[in-house]
Image (cartoon, rainbow, N blue to C red):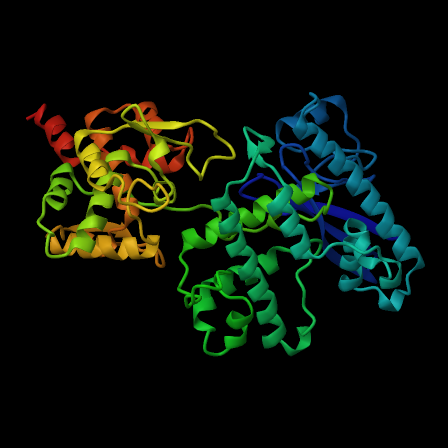
Length: 502
């Protein structure tokens, strides 16, 4: 009679602290097959799966019959004896963790029964490790083994992604009640087009998978690792597979030429994967799939940023007061940049501000990025420099906008040129987006509209170290990791502190 032995994998998932249960199906010397169960538990709750006679755990022999004394001693030493093949669940207090492990126990019992029954009726010549793994996979994903003519019409992978994009609520404090912003949707579309290109790439590059299609039920960690590799190397595939980018361009704006794909750094890929993970969390919640490919994925999981660099108030004033009369168009973009330094908003919010946003000497708006989760209005009093710039262009703009904006890309190009002409060119330490290593670059080469936001937050924090006050004017969400980065103490403050022990 065949027997099943279980042990716990030494590999522990970083996010859950759980390990996978490993199976061994054996019968004397004629059968010895191993497979992964697909069930994960913590070592604290799940000690071992024991047969009726004797077990050996980590090389330690446990008595065949456990008395109350030997049982206590075994538990004390981290070993547990079972006489009827039970799963030991240490925590008996009702909790999510206990419920999870109780379900794991039931799942293992059911899986064990199905394996033994399948083996009894199987053609013994066909029994192999692949056969065992197939039995386990069928147990977890029976829908994959339904004959095609009997399968219900299920939505495609991208139909599900579009459903998530258009209809799913954003999580706010653990509840799905927030509306996704247009910026979020635009960024999600970037992921969707990238996955379309990946799918098409597999069809073109692998003659054995010409009909390849992403499937919400079959995506696994190997697929995620393959997608990650594709995203990192997509920029090198342009010449070899031009049809991919012709079919699925980097953007959907037909008025603009689609840019060539650029190398992606860890943070960019991580941001895309976070959106893919959010999609799977929603799909599992809604019962659209039981598959979670991120369960054992150990690739990019967190974004890494250095300390923000920004211009000082002296450098800001140097730019603001520089004579650009010979370059009137550039002078206008300089004024817009200085105004942004005075109010600290994101460029996406800046470029939609109209005269109606100016109320009682302050600019008021609801940040687009956090609109779905935080409806709080940001109000920033306008200082004299900001009011002077507004009055300079009042009545001379289109569509009631407060300033004569151009496209965000041309605005960023103008900022770099302005820094260069105004002589703000000192070196700063930045994190290379591709390699993740620190490098030194002239600040004029890395300047952008976001530099104005950093100038506002960084210089305010040096003057008044009250994160709540500053966040109320910068529009950062509560508990923002990005905002926490601005709390670096400047060099002058460090010198003053060290001088106290001179």
